[in-house]
Length: 124
Length: 107
Image 1 (cartoon, rainbow over the protein chains, first blue to last red):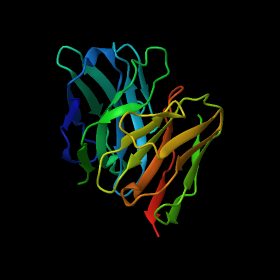
Image 2 (image 1 turned 90 degrees about the horizontal axis):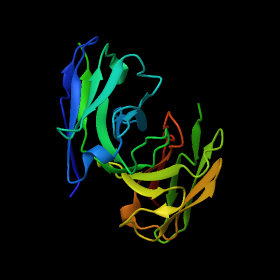
Image 3 (image 1 turned 60 degrees about the vertical axis):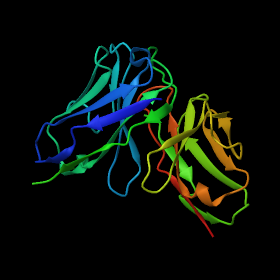
Image 4 (image 1 turned 180 degrees about the vertical axis):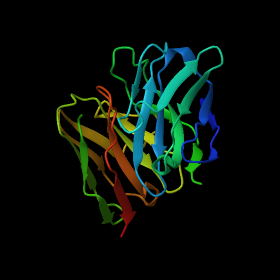
């Protein structure tokens, strides 16, 4: 059974730099791209970032480019999102999701498993 | 960047009705389009990928069609458990944008 478990959320001050993690199990982690999607309270889904299966390709939404960094450790079956210079508008539930492909060619193939999400609240 | 719009933004229909939601891309995405369902308070769930392929385990009353810039999600016979917000997503190239969502409820 595929399981994705996010952690690392919580209350963060503006300008803070938390790192959220997503521990995966139930599939061959190193064969699939992983994505972070966020959802602000009462709002829609916002795609944030994706990392290819091997970790050599990463892509970001313009809203987080230069502030967030996605990475993965295939030996630990874990994907990370390092968030820097947080703003109030970054407040959201952050979901990690498994792609159906490795995204090695720049195209991906949709998100077939999602974690339960971790809430990051940016407030002083 | 390619933008996605969805219409309508919300709809109310009766049980058993046929429901159609449209997703339009500002540029062609080939068939690199997925549909997700998010029930209130729940995690999003993949319904359709590659514009028309039903994800395993999804009821056959859901179907997808379209290509390039115009896509539709159809629920052939709306059920009470289909109350949710539905999102399209393009994934041909980054950014892998989601549409704004369509909220479906029962009349």
